[in-house]
Amino acid sequence: MEQNRIILHIDMNAFFASVEQQSNPALSGKPVAVIGAAKRTIITTCSYEARAFGVKTGMNSWEARKKCPQLIFVVGNNRKYSYTSKQIIAIMREYTPLVEVFSIDEAFLDVTGSLSLFGSAEKIAHLIKQQIRERFGLTCSVGIAPNKLLAKLASDMQKPDGLTIIEPERVAQVMERLPIQALCGIGAKMQQHLAKFGIKTCGELGRFPVETLRKHFGVTGERLHFMGLGVDDSPVVPEDEAEEVKSVGHSTTLDRDITERSEILLQLLQLSEMVGRRARKYQVTGRTVTLTVRYADFTTFSKQQSRGDYTNNSEEIYRAAVKILDTLDLTQPVRLLGVKITNLRHHTEQLPLFTEERKKALVASAMDDVNNKFGDFAVTFGSLVGKEKGAKVISPAWRPEGVRNVDAD
Image 1 (cartoon, helix red, strand yellow):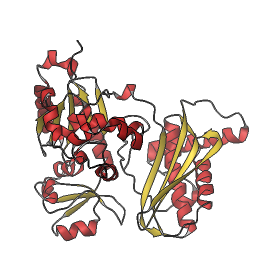
Image 2 (image 1 turned 180 degrees about the horizontal axis):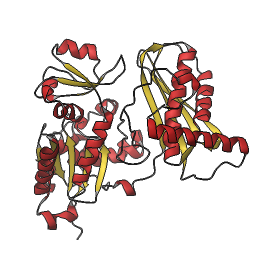
Image 3 (image 1 turned 60 degrees about the vertical axis):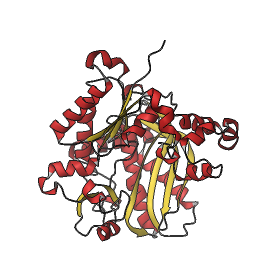
Image 4 (image 1 turned 45 degrees about the horizontal axis):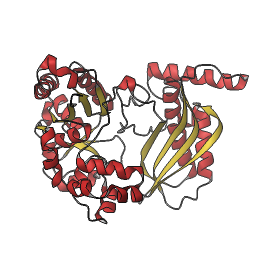
């Protein structure tokens, strides 16, 4: 008989804000909000002292200040956060090799095979919490359950610094009255769709005819049915076994809404260079370029265009993005821009066949070498010299290694 899996979900508490409070004792116990370096920014995360006043992630800085006049804004230091995250992940790997990084501040651990060494999942959780607290002064909330879905649910039940266990025999009881939005993967739109069927709790979702769910939601319908029952067969996938990434992209929220084509082009050139450089570093080329635009009213849309060949050359990515831009009729000022390459080909090392293309590749490689040594944009396109650089952010797709590791200032 196959042994039941035991999964931990470890979620760092107010991670960015807590790191800042530990770095600067003057911030300890005070309401702190971490923001970007741009003039117009939103709250990346905030301390629990700030949350007590109603300050939330994603809130505009002026709105947050209105709720908490004594709020202390701290410009985020992404290098500090990614470094700390990597050290914490290393602690987790002392207890099991099966560690799946879910984001910069959370991870899943399959400790099924580690129990003979450490005694119990609860003991492993306490040991990890203790090491993180002693080394970094940080707290985390841990959920223990038979699968990833329930482990993440459990880690949200007691914050901060909590430890919650959902035993297999308690799953049905826990799910019966649980609101569907408490489950990871059911957002506001799905919640609205399910409400039309009278489904508000996981118990109701699990009992609802799976055929009807399939008819309205396709293959997702069956997944929703199992989620309502608390069933999740997805394995914990370590980084070295993870599926290859499907895209390399970057976006930036602008300091102010812009309408001038020259300003939009400048931002696209910078974004294209950031995408191209990361793709070259990890020997990835893409055939499709996607441009994302967000208007001042937060309306967001994307449009893509496929090329005849694969590329990671920044200038070619930029030209493709501009071609897409030329097909758009921008009806409002622009708030955010993003550039992404998809349809990827991995591990491409050979130089191009034609002289001109080979020359471009060598120039790009030389620029990358200089920027790797002296910092981003130490050498760049002439039109970017002296221009303010867009804010780099750590996205939910962040990983401690590889192409998704945005090493941001």
